[in-house]
Every structure is written in structure tokens, then in C-alpha cells.
Length: 301
Length: 190
Image 1 (spheres, helix red, strand yellow):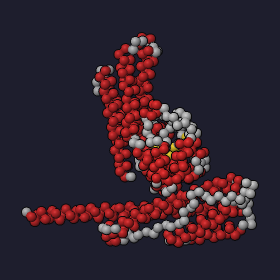
Image 2: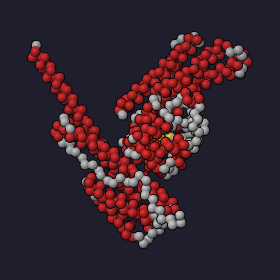
Image 3: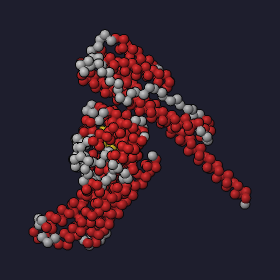
Image 4: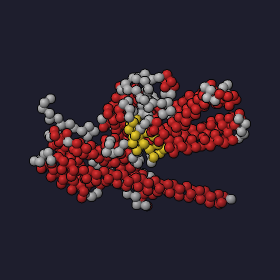
């Protein structure tokens, strides 16, 4: 467990450094092309630093907002609150903030930067379909992510990848509307600035799937097995999580809030498609081992 | 020359021993604090349960006035638990409280109106939540006690423990609540 925590901290630092280098390189190239000298590099590094700090400090809020999660009070959801508090006691960490996502697909995730600043979010569908023991199993899995600091790495990955995707869209659209769309009549053929934006945009578009690969490496699928095992150890009752995973596997409901930037955070891989089918693009971003494998391992416990 | 070397070796050994001493001592203190913290977590949840009992009795009484014996037993058990001292005494008193609460809830099963009462349902959820929190707090406490006792009992940390008067702590042994609440189904219609 302590090795896992140390490894997560190391990977987080590497990831942030990677983002700094990448954005710095892009800034440097832009600076050369626009002949502004080192200003481009400085600005890009500044942006990267702000981005990294923001995802460390406010990444949980970004992730929660992107899933449209809403904080619920003890009075609104007494059962969920009681379960979360119980497992926090079992794990010896402060009680995380409790959120509910208005989605019918049964799923859950944890986010935050450390056990003192953490949140657990579950979907409405999970609350409606799981009994107490199953809910404890799911929350136990998420609590394991909190204890192991998986949440820090996962949240930073989500916000950095999200930002890169946004930036690539921004560049592409700026090029599209500024160059071809002809909002400015005198710049119809694009011009050098348009060409540069296009190149940068394409570069980032190509980089985005690479970042997906990076997520796969950083957020290794092993940690889901580990969290399953640790969660079962927290509840001292593996059949709880087992029953929950069976129910999730049987649930045909699609997730609306699913997106590639945050897929790795969820309890089970969210899919925008109905049923067992996983989209081709989504398969590229496979962050979770198949539910059947996780169920098999839990059955062995 | 060899005398100087011997001195250096002695200094080195002394530093290593001192370092090990400091580390072991700190580990013992940290574990002792975690045991104390674990115990206060148990205490918080037990108190929460004491607070819930009068409410529960009052709610059930409104529907089942003539079951006085059950109400008196649960109230007495609660009073005894509040007065209980020591980890073992507390555990025994709490077991009595748990048994009586279970009995009270079994009685409640006989009154369909009561089972539909929103106040009662909320109380039941609070009670279930508190009981599982007691179980989790106990689990955490006992884990920490085991670690502390192991460190106090094993060599060479036992030497440090003995000279600084660290004593083994007792486990908190209470009955595990049933995972799935026993459903007493008295519906004759089905």
C-alpha cells in the first residue's frame, strides 16, 4: 500500500513535468514561427504551470462538474452518507464529501488530491439498484482509491488530458473559422498565422490519442484489481462488491457523462453505448480490466 | 591509527543504535495515538447510539404500548452501557444494548403501521448506519491494537517499549452485526 502511494506520487510528478515539457515545446515552436523569441516559451510554460497547479488544487471540482455531480446532505441521502462515513472510519481517513450524479447507469468514482480533500460520487442509478451491502462494496472500492492516492493521479490525468483536448479543439476551430469559414474577409486564404494554427492544431489532435496511451500506462489497469481487493478487505465482505459488479455487468444503461478524459476514474468503464458494446474509440482508451475478470478474482477471495 | 578507527566504529555503531531507538520510539507513539484515536471513534458512535435509543423507544411506544418489558430492558441496558468502564466492560454492556435493540426491532415488525412510519424508517436507517460504523470503528481500533501489541511484544522493539512503559492494549470484542438484517416475515396473506 505504501509502495502504491509512493508510486502514485512519483507518477503524478512525472506527468506534470511531461505536460510542462510538451506545452513548453509547443510554445517554443510558436515563438519561433511568430518570431517573438523566447516569449512563446515563457508564456507556454506559464500556462502549463497554471494548468498543473489548477488541476492539483481544483481538479476534483472540474471532474465533479464535468460529471454534473451534485453535493448531497446527510438528510437527503442518509444511507449513502452513513456508508461513506463507516468506510472512512474503517480506513482511518476523514470522511470524503458525498456527491450524486443524475445518471441511470450504476457507476461511481472518487476524486481529490489527498484523503483530507477527497470526494466520492455515485450515480442515482447505483443508489436505486444496490442494497446496503452492495453499496458498501462499491464505496469500499472507492475508499481504497482515496487511501492509495489513486485519486490524485487520476484527477490530474483527467484535467490535463481534458485541457489538451480543449486546446486542440480551440486551435482547430480557430483555424477553421479564421481560415476557411472566412469570418474575416481579408484573411480568406489562411495566411501564415492560419497555417501555423493548423499545424499546431493537427499536432495536438495527433497528440491527444498519445495522451490516451499515456493514461493507459500511468493509470495501470492493475490498480482496479488492487482497489477491488483492498475495498473487500475494508468491508471484510467480498460478496458485497461481487454482487455489485454482477449487477453493473447486467445493467444495459448507457452513460451520458462518459468521456475519454475521465473514463479511468470510474468504478466500471463508462460507455456511451447501450449494453455490453464498447465503441471502437473507447476501446483505444480501455482503462479498466473486463468486469468478468474482476468478478473472477473477487470470487477467489 | 587503529585506535582512531576503533573510535570511529564505536561512534558509528552508537549513531545507528540511537537512530533505531528514535525510530522505534516514534513508531510506538504513532501507533499509541492511532489506538487512542480508534477508541474515540468507537466512543463517538456508541454515544450516537445512546442518543438514538430514547427516540426509538418513544416512536415504537406510540404503536405498541403494551410491550413495556422490551422498552424497559433496552432503557436499562443503555443506562448500564453509559456507566460501563474499561474496554471489556464496555464491550459486554454494548452487546446487551445490541441484543435489546434487535429485540425491539423484532417487536416493531409486528406493527405494519409502525413499519410504514417515516420517522421510524429514518430512525432505523440511522440505527443501521450507526451499528455498521461501530463495527468499522471496532475493526480499525482492533487493527491498530494488534499492530501496537505486536511491536511491543517483538524483539528488539520490546526493549524500547519496556523502558518507556508502553503497555499492550485490550481488543474491543463485540458481536458482529448481521450483514443482512434478519427479516421476520409475519405477513400471513402471502
